[in-house]
Amino acid sequence: MTKTRVGVLISGRGSNLQALIEACKAPAYPAEIVLVVSNVPDVQGLAHAEDAAIPTRTINHKDFASRETFDAAVTKALKEAQAELVCNAGFMRLHSEKFVQDWWNRHLNIHPSLLPAFPGLNTHARVLEAGAKISGCTVHFVRPAMDTGPIVAQAAVPVLPGDTEDSLAGRVLAAEHCLYPHALRLVASGAVRVEGETVAGLTRVKDKAPQTPLFSPPLDEGL
Ligand code: GRF
Image 1 (cartoon, helix red, strand yellow):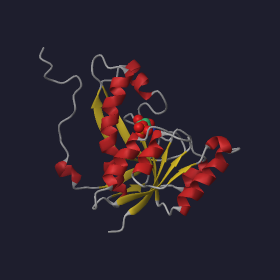
Image 2: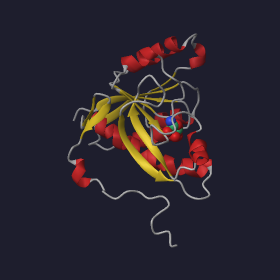
Image 3: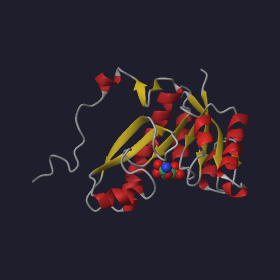
């Protein structure tokens, strides 16, 4: 089986990277990670990659005069590794227009909200402040504007009474660790594709998908 060659971009902890590494271990999984690039030296994510014997590169954005030259170095590294698809996994840099164009429809990001709601930083704090009762996470193709682009898959997560930023982040992160391998499988296998500016495919899902909505608070709250 030919596996899609994936480069992962990180800036820190790398727990989503670790989830992708675990998924890629399955012989039938349609992707393999051929390179992990971090823009921050010595982060935990790099150790995850090294433990799994995946090649790593640290390309420190501080060593570059502009976003464009940094991005060009990242693309060069990805091309050298013959990456066909790029996955941002907690990569905390905005991309130049050129980078986005170079990897158009071959570049995924994960964001810890139900996009298009709550793009950007401090997501969970803003979800709590807004009093939203359901949050979640999204894997989408990357477009020039931050946290926009055709949505591949989402998971909904309830916001619970008494939630703090940390408790909500933890619940969403657990969903992220299932969602990203799932979304990457869909894209790498060719089961879904971008049509116009949405993601299409998987018409048979209709029969399998639960028809019941997620209620938060639950309907049977006991009142
Ligand atoms: C995740 O919540 C991801 O959605 C966001 O940044 C966080 C990265 O966490 N883009 P990790 O580095 O994968 O642990």
